[in-house]
Image (cartoon, rainbow, N blue to C red; front, side):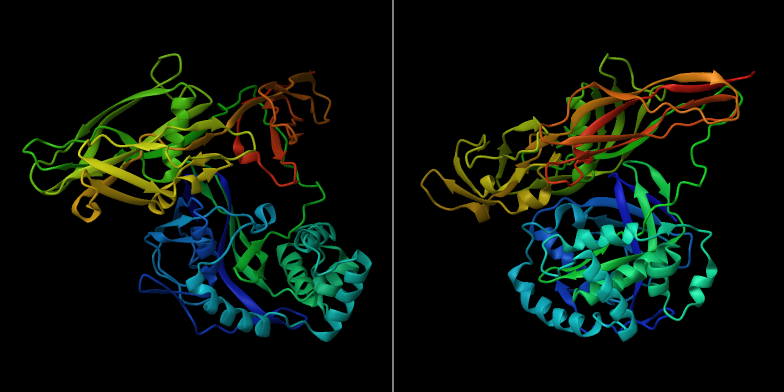
Length: 561
């Protein structure tokens, strides 16, 4: 299947989960007969965790899924208010007939954020308590013989279910308990208890073995867990990527919040050849193509006989709006022309007729560089109303990521209509620490009251509009990592050079940068000396996405004898 997203990150697309383990495999799970009701629509309890993310004003990303398989799969942590996918009512398996659909997804990793500060809306706490009872009754089962062995593992590893870090410790143990090997000894799958044999005897296998072992170990510790099948993909902002083969992982239940996904599969022994370069002395351009979806900003005015047209452009989602703003921060500029107008009362559409992006040096942006930005257009709306329009403007407050929070003050707004007094409440509740922009959900939580000059509340008699031109924003911190170049005469051995350095920018104090240089070439020819980079915060969580990393890679060359 093909995945297109406006965000870079890991996506786990779930097909189904299972119930009891019988030693040789997993049995069907029992469906829960209750539902989450949001705006009159029923959703399965698999959506429960999304309610907490929505309550905390996390920003959702638009993801398009094109299915080339018979399975109907959906990512975790879906936003209730976007997309055209088929809503699910089963908490066990997903089904649908559409082959192309969009979903709005919260990119959330439990091991990184550990659900800090998340709570369900009060209206759903009783529903969660009822579902939690069902979960504990159905997802703690472990065969006695399996449990006996896993209890010895728990004792040897010193695991304590009350340890606040128990989840990460179990994941780390399982990932390192065996070697990932597609060519594992298939006799493992004929054992009387596959999980015990995997951990104790064979110590190698694939995702299904890791996921089964993790699920049962969590259950033995008293943490409800489910074995899950689906697909995994790493999305790249603005690009389309293919998912790999079917994948298995583990879910655990977090009391008061719902199911979260955990990746528990370990790594290979390094025998796979993934780093050799080609011959011939030529290389394709190393290029990142980024698509940004934009639209005219929705406009509104009170009827006065004049034509209303669009005057600004924004992203079709909060993430695309951020990407557009980041281009300006980096020194890019653009020109845009609009079509469409509205004069009479009612709503019309606006559209983009021309959009030209200019590089920081003033030249027209094209596909000749490392990063190539491609733009897709959608329509905006033009509304002419018969009531006065009062527009609230927020101050433009921004900074570069430094690991600390930035927030509005209660007075960081203004309006231009002299005949009104505007009071905005809730601004100081809007803050950002990680890169991003004040999103629509944050703004929708504001309370705006409009008074006339006599102190009368006239909010219901005017059209209140929030201008989104200037917003609270945290920009990614720019750094450049450079790798060395190297060359040699062909000798049949791989050529590598693990030398790297930070050639521009710096890491936030208290954070650490880990770079793994992966470039390698054996045959005559050239290859880029590529690398992987991970940045860790002071608490050990990954914060790499808060950095805009520019690649400056060396060239590895092998010459003929």
